[in-house]
Every structure is written in C-alpha cells, then in structure tokens.
Length: 261
Image (cartoon, rainbow, N blue to C red; front, side, top):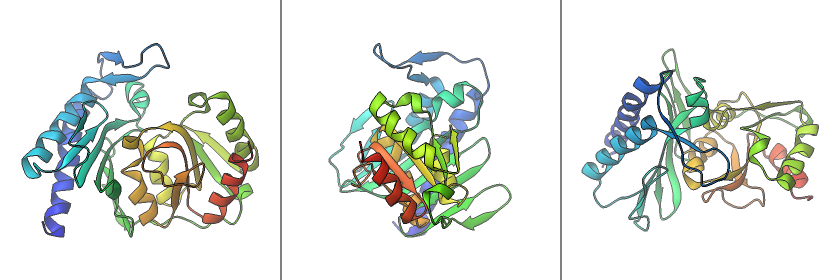
C-alpha cells in the first residue's frame, strides 16, 4: 500500500469506530462487569460495536494481518503485522459521561508498534504517530505534536488514571514521585499520554496496563520526542508498569524513585 492509502485506511477505522460509539455516549446504556471478583471492569455495547466494526474493515483490507482487541481477543497474533485495538480506552470515564476516553488503534510489525492513533470522536480529535513524528488533527487546527522540555522532576506536571488501580507497594512508590512533582492530577487514561505528546504535561505513571492500552500510544509519544518505558526502563510494548515522559531528565528521575523500592 502507498502511504496515502494507509493514512486513508487508518482514518476510516477511526471514523467507523466513532460512528459506532457516539450514539451510546451519555445515554442510559447497559454496563457489564468483565471482572471475576476483582476490581470493577466495565464493558458496554459501544466497546463491542466499535471493535467489531474495526475488525471487519481490517479483515476485508488485510486478510493476512493479525488482530488483538480488548473485547474479542486474538486472531493470528503471531502474524508479521498485527492490529492492536482498544475500542474505548477509559470506559469508566465513558460510562460516567466524562469525555476523557478514546479509541486506540495500533499497527505492530514483529511485535513492535510502528503506527498508533488515538481518536476522540466526541471532540473530533485525532492524535497519531509513527515513532519518528506525531500529528494532531482537530476541528479547529492541525499541527505537529512536540513534547515540552522540563529540566527537573520538581517542575513536572504528573498524571495517573488513579492510584487506586495500583497495589500497595506500587502506590507507595508512586506517592514518592507525586510528593516531588509540581502538580499531580488524576484521570485521563489515554488522553493523558496525548497531552504529554502535545506538550501540556510532563509525566504519566501507571500500572497494570495491557498491550492494547499502550501499543497505539508508544509511537505517538516517541514521535513527539518523548520516551515511554516500563518502571524497569524496558520497552513498554507488553504493558505492565509504565512511565511516559516528555523530557528524558524527568523520566530518569522518576525511574530512580520508582526503582528505589
């Protein structure tokens, strides 16, 4: 495929997923709990409809590609090219009527994310990246995404979805980082990483993430000049405990605290 064809296909995936989701947003919808006795893990008809719509398009266009999605599992996950889909990252925000959610679409090659998009259809925003560059397109502007410099951790703005999602030891380690930064805020899910890529915040620290939570975000953050790893400083593709930073000095300082135990 040419680059133009690929770009058009990604946009189509984002469009059809948004069309499936928006009729459900801020309505009275049935909410199922996917957890098996653990923390509340909601899923809705919007999640399922969006993933099914994207899967159908991918199978039609790329029958040899694999697909891994949050709601319907893995299909040919060992293929050279695999699409990794999270139809609604931030379902808890979605069911609460809050707009801090988005659709995550990633393409991996041999396990490495090579393209990612976060689509927020309610705002009409698309954040995308290929690891080398990243772009924003919205209803009022289009621009290149670029992280901002931040010389030290004590000047950083930190986001996490919620410390309550962390186990006790990880929450204590996060708390030590939180005590150091200039400002700490909760919420955001995938949106926080995009705000980091856009240069509005400096640090995101999370735990218990799945590959479909991070695959699309890695090329966006890296393309904007940021860094995204595990707490151990390893590649983030498999999820787990994640640190994303716009400035490598902040990333290194956060890792030092998180690894101190």
